[in-house]
Image (spheres, helix red, strand yellow):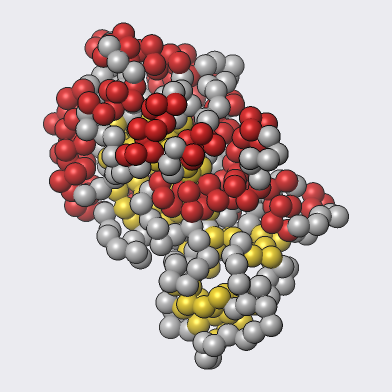
Length: 449
């Protein structure tokens, strides 16, 4: 799309915005006008995209993922296991990652996300076997080819089995190596400002895979470099017990002791916080990525989303790794979160609009990008357009509700920064059949050892 040319996305079937019944005008990567019912655009010389068959959403935002795990979906050795034994089964397989397999795994993950209406994604990469030192650089290149916005986290593990942690020795690094590379990737790739396509955050994997020294040093480095912080926390009761045994405190207390309890931080899962801890999170504006599918597959528990929001905690959605979901479809994650939280809280407290809000404005708050996640003047022109022409939608009433309740899973059009990156349900220039062939071959090689 010519960025100087304004485009009117005209007369959508439905749109997740007030006062935009006749659509929106985008120009230069921004939303410049909402067109209310009965009006024409005030913006002159607009081209037209007829959206009469489309439901228009802000681009969905994925706040937690592990791209490389697309290579170990439904792996037999890891089936029917809870988190800790699940990790122990998978770490030896993940230790076989290569630059080529990571490139394929990341491309599959981001392609699946784009096709599900996701315009911005995070990734938490923390496995660095020998030869994979440039993992973040590999992911940046893959994202650039696809045109998706990314917040890639330079993850880390330095507490191996011999030190009382879970990971094997071959996938951990020493603290100096980790911190040096964190500084390198931020300097090389992190973009600032509202048009940023690539940002970097720092992300020790979890309290049971990194040392206290690394947690504290990472928080100090993130403050100095002015980037965000991310980790897993309060995902299982086993983690609570681990922290109490090793650090003589609960996970949130440990996080605060390490300098992490602040608005720079967003956490994956957040299932096992007590009411006082939720209030502390809210006061600190520390955000939570709710991963409904992963939490159900691993039987970890259910994030208390409504209590969290009442305490002032920002809530976003994450698909989590494709070995615990086992997909990278954010629209399906919206439905899963809606159903899980509706079952927990009842029809009076959770609606389909709540689930859509978590995946848009809520997720934007998680990653510190307020210019994303909302259809409003001045916001980024990141949009997901869905058709309701599949059998699953036949007979629908409310189009927005139908997306969630009837199980939308594939966007027809996706725009990032004013550019169409999905057209007619496909990513232009991507040979999907070839990608599946090469990705599947790489997965089989990893599984075989």
